[in-house]
Length: 106
Length: 359
Length: 120
Picture: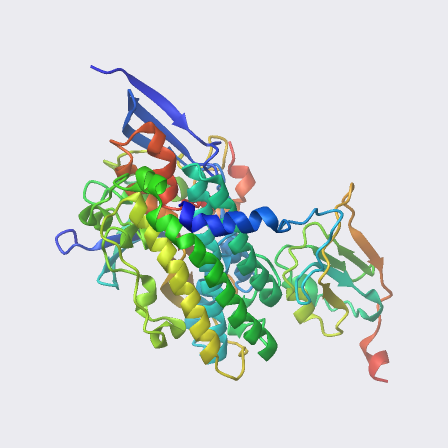
């Protein structure tokens, strides 16, 4: 992807209950190319911010919203890019919906 | 060895319309590092969209951003239309283009005003906003609101343009053009503006590409890329050609936007002249199933929507990648090496919209 | 700069200001502007179509008690309820809501009507 001079568009994460689905979207001459990976929830996932540095924002956002840890992420906001310290953690996960958002706040 | 100082730039700063914090490490007057902190206006909108009925989400998507709200509703509606296999009537598509380009005109004029304000030309700021007011009046007369139009709906449009209004619009667009053309030479030729912007915050073509810059930031660096070239809606019939500048500095980004205002006015006039007759809305039915990625060009750049649905009424995932979200890494690349006094101009030159970024 | 801006500067010096002194001079709203929601409860059949469509949750209907509550300050004036209403008792007025000191929810009591009585 890097060699072909693709432009990173974004990283999208979807919660499939058992695991997380990451979709990396790239733009190559106005054509969208998607790469889809499954990630386990409690295992750290390798970050692409070493290659595409611009991915750090999207990956930090996923870390905030889904609680998926990224390895070698720089700069790493530790899950506090968008959320404040007293906000509910990992609000985009499905279980949170069942539990209720407010109970999750510590 | 010059001493290093850390300066918090924002979240409340006179040049920022919205709260963004940049932690700048400066060596004397030179910036060496910039780290952004976001999250001051995070609203959890994507989560809210999952809990909502998908029809109600039009109004939610519209409120992602106060400036490009029409583009958000258009993109959302076209996502749902693709999932439900709806063919939108051509008149509705043309109306959407007209409103979208109108919001591009007013967004760029707003930005040009703020930009003028950032390097201290207060009167130019006033003149820009005065011209902008006319386009807002057009939106209010036709769409019902100054910025939040609520005119787009799934399957078409909720507002129509009658013949009198269409004629009045063509006239009004010509007048906006005349007013704006008086300001164009100031932005292009003025000595003090050039002094503040030429060669400041340079982003090379390679960096723009690899850091994922979008919109005017990308086009000012010489990359010919615009989501409108994808030919969604009536753009395929418009012989659309993007505005590209080569230099990649703040001046080039300003020039791109000035030219895009003129281009958008052109597109509106052409669309108004060609406006086809017919229905503006089709009814829809069916179940939402599947996933769709959709890209559209906002005033600030390319925006990506991802909608995934398997349940009947609610969405499984709703993701918005707004242009500013993609433009922050290039901004961090531009800042190191510049003077502290240039930081406001450079930061504004990407047209930051923080509400968009954090949703 | 001087050549470009001079005509504008001169014009602005001798013309009237383009701004209005708002509370004293008042611009008439555009005819199709969305200003505020006006409710006419005489025709309401308590079908709750407006409640279901409202994206802001500004309308609350309790059918059994015949209560119709409308909170004008959470209304976003989108007009979804107007399109949904089968009896056309909701309407969008082009004039906007004036500032007030206290936010009040508007409440109506409506006698539940039977549908058959209408057709008979």
